Length: 107
Image (cartoon, rainbow, N blue to C red; front, side, top):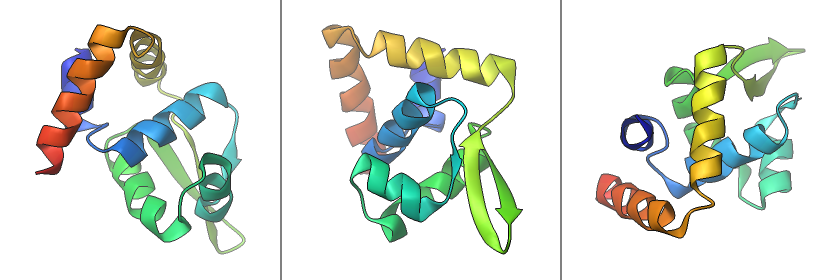
């Protein structure tokens, strides 16, 4: 299940950072610019990845005053999967396998 999550939803290191950010800040709802500042990445770079996570059902996107705001989905099963992924990342062996699959997906 986690392998499929990586292959289909968290298939880049930027998405990995974003998933971790939203896991650590489950009530965050913010713009790409602000999220980029928090995770130390370029806003233009993460915007595409944010939209990919929206399409994958991990995040939700709302328009507020003409600006897109991103937040973790309310779907309980997806939130649980995100939590399981982040906890699994504490295991070195899992991280090595996950990194392998992300690199493979980027080719």
